[in-house]
Structure formats: structure tokens, C-alpha cells
Amino acid sequence: MNDSTEDHSRPAQPEENRRRSGRVVMRPDKARLLQRHERPAFLDSDPWRALRILSEFVEGFDALAGIGPAVTVFGSARVRPGDRTYDTARTVGHLLAEAGFAVITGGGPGAMEAANRGCQEAGGLSIGCNIELPHEQSINAYVDLGIEFRYFFARKTMFVKYADAFVILPGGFGTLDELFESLTLIQTGKIRHFPVVMVGTTYWQGLIDWMREVQLKAGAIADADLSLLRLTDDPDEVVSIIRTFAREVPSEGAPTEEAEIRG
View 1 (cartoon, rainbow, N blue to C red):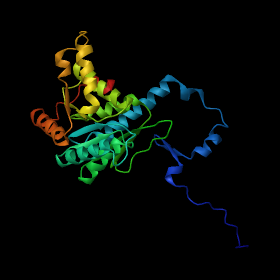
View 2: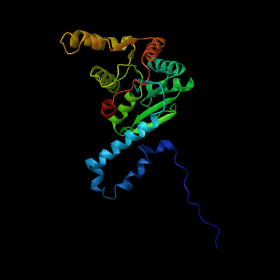
View 3: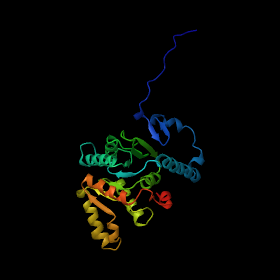
């Protein structure tokens, strides 16, 4: 028996060399091997897609059902440490954790990372609901509880269902999407009226002025709709607004079943 066997082993591949899609992790350079075989037609059918969607709701509900009072924080994925928005998000996350709230973000970089970081540093529960994107956004290093989603609407349901407030920091289209989604759900009575706090007067004042000068004057919204928003530059005021609401409206005033389904 020959003991001088040749070692064909390869070094383990680091996590960053792999792409995660839901529960599946794979090296991108191996994806071509899957393409050698024809994909079964039923995998692209609507009934099968419905099961994948359902699984995201079930896993999300199961993971987040016991988190307690929580606040969802939104903001740009493009800011970096040292940027004013990053530092503000980190402070907000820290103060929310000290006030007894878990912090939920989109789980990615930028303001999301900063809010998770501040929360974790203060000993709070830092949560990230990440989304599968073409540029392979991964969950940031400051997330204690992470959930990955393929479908935006399933992810957005988790943001709303388990939040006692929304904090909106300067951001892009995704941040605006979450802002107007929350306002629509509150305005139409699909969820309870919780605080929507916009942070950054310089950044957001123009949008609020446009709502007042254009939408309100056109009759597209009412004065009461504008009152759904609070605007501040002070992280302490952000937490004060949310704590006041939490004392007045206990967390059991949960979103309606319709909102859970709609996302």
C-alpha cells in the first residue's frame, strides 16, 4: 500500500467569495455548472413562486415575533463612517437601544450599518432584514439577528409589522419608498398611527415644503396628512418622540392583519 498520496486539497474559500441567496450560498464562479442542466419548468411557475413568497413571510414572522419594542431605521447605503448621516444614525441606534428598543434596518451598509452599530454598542438587539440584490449586498457586521429576503414586499412587511416607529435619515429611492409606504399605510388606516420621524432638516425640508405648497394646495393631501411627519436634527428628540408615543400607545396595538398581508 502506497502511503505517499498526492495532496489535491484546496484552501477553504472565504465567505466574501460566496454569494448568498436566501438559504443558498454559492461561489459565483461555479454558477455555470448549474447552467449545464435545464431548469425544471415548474420552478418558474406562479404556484411555486407563491410558496417561495410564503416561506419568506413564515421565516420572517418566526424570527421576529419575540423581539419586543422595536424601531425601524432607514437611510442611505452610500454613506461611510465620518459622514454626518452615518454618525447621526449611529447615535440614534445607540440612544434607541438605551431606551429599550431593538433596532431594525435593511441590514446593509451606510446608515443601516451605522444604526445597527450604535444599537449593538449600547447592548441592544440589532436586527437586519437584508435583500438579495444584483450587486450582492451582504448583511453588515453589526447585525445580531439577520434575515435575508428575495422579495422587497415581504421584507417591507417585517419593517412595518414589528416597528413602533420609523426613523427616516437622508437617503435615496429606497428610503423614499419606505417613507411613503409608511405614510400611505397610516393614512389609509392599514396600520396604527405610529411616529414617522425624519432626521435632517436641510435634507428633508424641501420635500416637506413641496408637499405643503404643491400637494396640499392641489387638494391631494390634507393638513392631517402633513401632521403624520416629524422633522428634527436632534437624535435625543428622535428618541423622546418615540418614547412618548410608546408610553401612550402600548406595543400590543399591533398592525392589522390586512397590513401583515399587504406589507
